[in-house]
Length: 612
Image 1: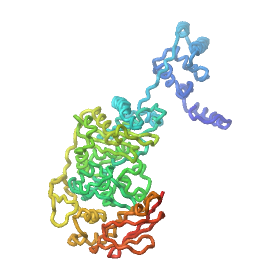
Image 2: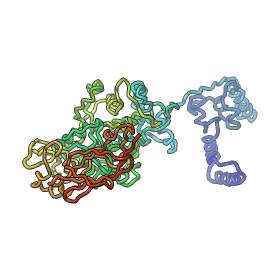
Image 3: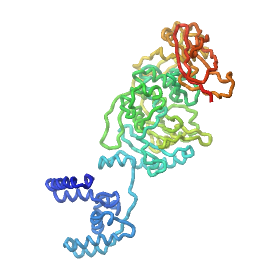
Image 4: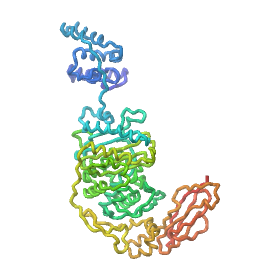
């Protein structure tokens, strides 16, 4: 019973030897205790104590002699003796009592009382608190958890109510974790909104499953950028189209803002500035941060993920995401969260406390018009730093928030991987779906405090210009990390930014930048082809005339002479002007095009056209 081995002749011989070992090392009372802890009691019930709770809803110490007699009779033939409808359990216990009487182990009075006593089975549903942790806890034996059952139950009840709000969006699953930041103990662990929901896979653990983090990891890019002197909260960044080896990230709104402050870019979750900053961070990028804290799902080398890592193009568990945000709450010190008391994991300093404070302030002060739909939930709320995330096709919608006291992570989606859908003209997103739940949970958690500004934050006047050309156009007071020197990164002015400045009429040509210290580096840029896009397929209606099936060609040169030359497949070169589009009809097939500038620098791409 202890080892659950198959019943074979060889195994019986082994068990005979083990029986002698038990006799040599243990007393009869100890062996009997082993037996009672492992004896079969019908179904999946093992052990006398388990049977006592299951069949009589009592601890063994509270059982009557009749109840004890019945439980002692079950293991002889568990299927024949366990409680069932229309089975006379009193006859079973009386047979055992008669044997005890015959063996003179009972007095006449004890025997008569126990035989006359009518016992009844009280099978009730066993409590199944924190069901998603139960299996792991069972494997570790008897343990004391950090779960606050009152908080756990209130959040479970809240999630059941919240599902009624989100079900019209084709959302059927949700998960929540609450971490006490001071101790890194898990206060609530809700793996799914309904453990018993077989239709939608309620027994899946949404806190361990890999989900897209969406935009929730962008704060860590900005924190590292603050530490490296690439930005300050009010420093302006460029939000213009970006082309990375055929990958063209876009903002959620499908538009570009031109120039925005770093705070606005993070608060509005703009994709381009985040990708650009991560690129400039080089060996201090998000990938290295995740690698440093040993995020378990980060199993490939950096090039495998590329720019999509910042935008949620991979999977991470909600529990690990919550641990990362708890790091911001704890001044840059990362530590794994535990659900077992008296067990804590090592701490490691990853971010500067000053950067964490600045990021927390930015996240808490976000003036977002899109919160109008959830404004009622924000009323009378304590100050919370939080970030939302929405994956592609709105399959994962999450919000992670924190105060000095708690970190809360909320996820909505479908374990099946099915996408959500609009309802009454409202498109599901992290802001609309998961944020209201997060705010309600913080209300359940009670009064919250706010962070004390750490030493090393200073207020200075900075040049707010995204690119300073000559004298500074806008100077502004901003908060900086005292020991960090601001960098004037030449690579901030990538080819797309130069083309943007030309389109906006800020400069007519790169010749106007000759006095800038980065001029020689910018002048070395190869031409930038902004249309067509690398490796993309362009489809046209085959019934249309050729004039309506032309492909747009657009290229920017960074030479003083703005003349460029198009080489399309094997045709004769076409003379053009930097930034001026031309249109040509191309046969449906794979094409190779090149843009050559006056400095003999060339960029080539391939793409496809098809006619349907």
